[in-house]
Image (tube, rainbow, N blue to C red; front, side):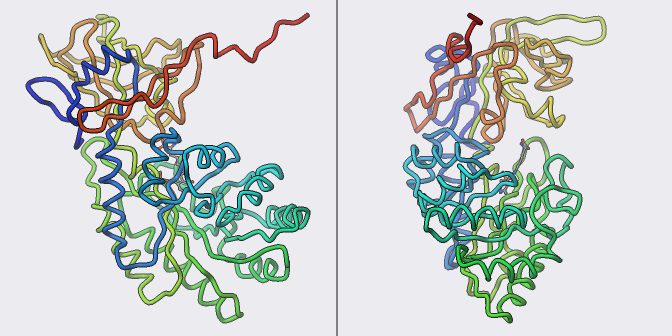
Length: 413
Ligand code: LLP
């Protein structure tokens, strides 16, 4: 993982030794590289150069304000899925006029907030939502900008939990119904049709399904144009995968090329909603080995990070590379587990590690869907987050304090 490399036998984040970060901030700590964020963004900017396009960073992948602010400064918009994420965009210095709002369950309050802040577009996911949005817009004397999120029924060939564009998924409206619903929307004066939205899944390694979905979106756009409905943009969602293990991951440019070919000659602006590919390999989870335990059948490295910090292995059986920060002693094979009282609390299975008790390990590719999916299970305070920028380290989220965890709780009288 670039920007997290070994120097003189120990792992660094850019120019800072992870050992120094552990000494100053403790463990577990998420460590991000600003250079990695900037480079991942530049890969999109280069691939899209010369095309009218807007990147809307998917906030759900990592919603730390400092990370969002790095992207806001680079000019991105944001893809949000809740009123909470909208509040973060504003707190991070993002521009609401570059926000798209996805999600199947938008509440009236969330709609009101988004309308009041003047977001760029609602990605509407059902007819019922369309009517609710028109009603809320009317009550505020505003027009709501919309795209319909269409479900193109394309198989993204990824993990079933993170594919979203199949008929069986809850997302979007079936593309076959979309035309009719657009005509309905066009009759509602409180709505302003801006585009079409589509997102087929996450951790995609093959560009073909997205290009196929784009083809269906273009066909719909042409049909709408024939009925006098003009569109400002086509939103093809996020999804580009990253390398966790030994997957072959296309370069951003190569992933986008077939999609851009399908869109060639279209005048609408292209919107993309990448999350993982911008942040996933820009962060590691730094953790300390508490104990080495020899079982009858397996050896365990019990570390101070757990499924509450990084849920992906427990939830999706996802692979994250784990490396010693400074290898030493004899290597052995370990299941790397956390202290949480669940057998599913593992970070990695059967990993070869040369570690002793109290040594540090780094869990790679933890920048996306790491902190945002963390929890307080077992009353564990959530990790600290730091951002490395060259030789500097910035604390971007203080470690949670135990008393904060129950601050809102009350005893019975
Ligand atoms: N846009 C929409 C509408 C989405 O639902 C998502 C992700 C994205 C954009 C960003 O997708 P990305 O570029 O990050 O692939 N927790 C899972 C991933 C869930 C993805 C949900 N939607 C994981 O850890 O793998």
